[in-house]
Length: 87
Image (cartoon, rainbow, N blue to C red; front, side, top):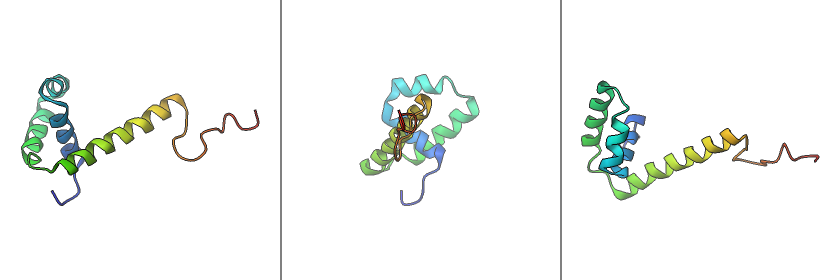
């Protein structure tokens, strides 16, 4: 795939990457309309390269790290020690 991937296409790639059982568990939580869309995108993205898949997975992991940092109140970029400054 040469073009920029949409969020739904990336989700389809991730679902394919996590395997059938895990993907089925995720799909059970979705609306039928979303399942149809993802199914279509899974077919559409079936022939991506390993490099493209790895890129999507890396993007997802980076997003998870940022979200986890935000939950804990830490900063990922720059100095994460504002709270420790002056202590």
